[in-house]
Amino acid sequence: MNLFFKSFTVLFISCFIISCTTEGYGEDSPGGDSTPLEVTSIKLSISSENIEVNSEIILTVLSDKNDLLTSSCKFFVNGNEISGNTFKPGEPGEYTVYATYKSLKSNTKTFSASTEPIKNFTSNVLVEDFTGAWCGWCPRVTYKLTELKKTMKTQLIIVAAHYGDAFQYSKISEMTNAFGVSGYPHARINRSVKWNEGEGVDAISSVVSTTSKLGVLIESSISENNLSIKVKAKFSQTYTDLKLGLFLLENDLILDQRNFADLGYGSADPLVDFEHDDVLRVALTSPLGDNIASDATKSGSVFEKTFTYEIPDSYKKDKMHIVAFITDKNRKSLNARESAIGVTQEFEEL
Image (tube, rainbow, N blue to C red):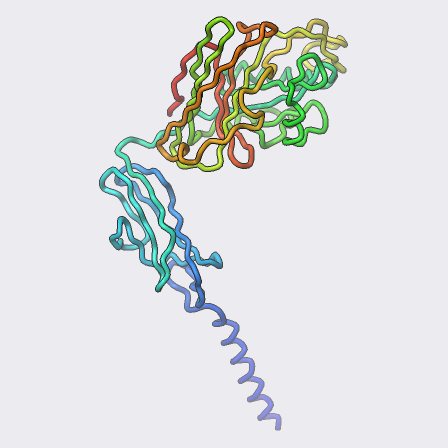
């Protein structure tokens, strides 16, 4: 009886181990892929949509259950099967690629090969300072941004969005609601991260140390009060769901500023005849940006849009400047540019 029980136990455990190690999967394939027994669809991804001739592109396939199938698939470029999952185009042009796994065919992807080096662009950081002349702690952010601008120059773009004073932007609530501004001062880096100015400038300077895959330029002219602006964006990779924002700012606006301590300007309260710069006066788009058609944001494309605006007599046009920025679907600014009126810029290609 004991021998029978022991034999039965060994047989049961062996069957259990076999069933656990093989249920739902086949053998491990080379390269670490784990191949499901049942796959209903496959999805192809590529490492880049724009490369240089003789550079390598890497192809990857996932199942509908997000299992890696790459080493079990066949790959076809322009209809011809290739060896492995990498490809080096020898000539410039457009290439299409798809994969097969057993009887399944993946989606088709397209990439471009060029003899020209792929361009990157200078990365400029947009910092929006939500402020007001009534806010006694706001001068500390203003001072630190002003000092930082002296070293970062054009790579730091400041927008002072006022609330509750004579310079209040007419659609300020649309911005504060979108970015969760509940207290002042409140500064946001590239519309995505709240800046804690007490921790220093690293969060801002680290942005400009990187490069961008899109560049922005501004061209403008003025006749009397009639302002014409053209914004262009150039892409070194394909994007979707982008928005363009365009602001007009004014400098040298004078208004007493509350001041609760020596935050860089002395300890007087108020700071009499305080100079407010980079004040957001008007947006020529929605303050959250206007949609850009996806067919205009493909790799190698140049998007452009023209705006006209009659500057009110109450604004000092010689004190005004322009800010343009491109944001993604999460409202993050991917790059921005600042320009004086009447200037024609070039792309900041690297």
